[in-house]
Image (cartoon, rainbow, N blue to C red; front, side, top):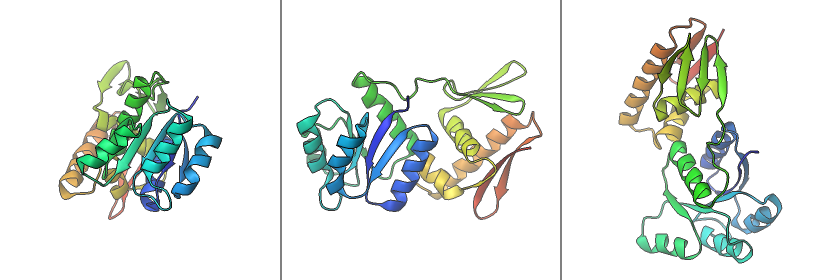
Length: 228
């Protein structure tokens, strides 16, 4: 059964990207943008983990966490914030928060933190399944981070694996380069952009065994993953 996440975020563009990225990785995500609606959503949705932005309209993340803790002492709470003051971090933990993640963040960091708070809480782990995806001649073991062809295995790095998953999840469509950078690196800086070029080149070299698999560059936009 998918991990259920209550995600409270009022930055709609960021929220949309994070929600869709988590759903693409088989999380069940309920998102709210108004802090005043978060507690009712919590009661109805009964999530496995809560991700709360600190700065929210009508009721901030700290107030939501305090309300949640008044009715549930166990559910993990992860705060998302652009704040850097130590006092804010301390306050979050004092109110029952389990972890903090600062903006900007990458999806891979967020997933690792979700997995960590669930494991520490004795709940189901995010990485409990060994998902297998057939890609032409290849077998892609996402949990093991392995590409297999003709019995030979290629071990992928974590970021190589996440990038390939993003391409597969958006196959035949175009995935925006900026979205990839924000999801996997946390921002679209020049340095990270050059890193993405390197990773795309690596994936192309790994997949060249099967000419029916192609990562196409859509100039000025992003990439399209084709399985013909």
